[in-house]
Amino acid sequence: MVEATHMMPGREEPARTHCIRCGTCCMKGGPTLHEEDVTLFQKDILKRFDVYTLRKGEVVRNIDEALIVLEREMIKIKGQGKAWTCMFYDEDEHACKIYKYRPVECRALKCWDLRGFNEVMARPHLQRSDLIKPDDGMLEIISAHEQRCAYKTLESAVKGLQGSDSDKAVEKILDLLQYDHYIRPFLAEKLRVDANAVDFVFGRPLTTTIRMFGLCVKKKGDNFVLMPLDSPSSRPEQAAIKPH
Image (spheres, rainbow, N blue to C red):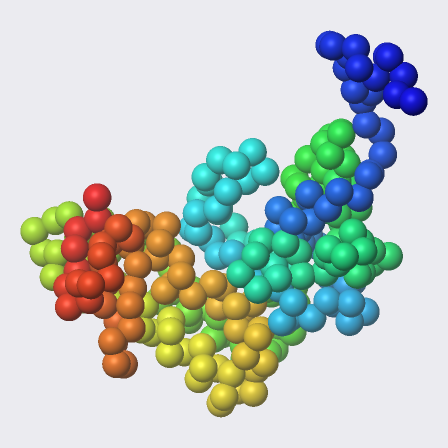
């Protein structure tokens, strides 16, 4: 029998004080890693191919769903395929596969009280240099990529599409996209880097993140075709269109 009090209108639900394992936090994306999480790599709980880098200048959504430009790089745990759900979340069991060793953000997160989580978010984030030995030549490769494919450089070229020399801006954008695209398999094949770890080394591909500027690309042979996101796919011959 259902008690009458359960059916009374206007009755407030009691404030939650514990996790009910709904999985909502895990399905909104993997956590951002902090300096304390370096031990998870040292213990082989996490590996480079489990994470990806969000680079300085990249546009992302914060916890309040607001778009922000990153002032410093971040490293995050990957999702499951194309979904945001953290790769370590088991939906069938409603549980974390590395719960005992979960990252510091996950330990601090209480959806009913975000004070501890907000405190952790303010701590220094883990950097690629924290996971690569100082004498490893990989740092020089990353530095060269950062200089050539900086988001500030890409943003400047995109703004140039609205200027009088838009053809030169298109050429610059395509040069950046192709350099970023082709250095990835080179790194994997020639330097014996796990192909799944390339997004940790170089961050997400520019062919993906170019969308934050209202543009997308399609591959045509060995080259790329640039177009606005709302451009019909039936017009691949169009080399470039000024973004709205």
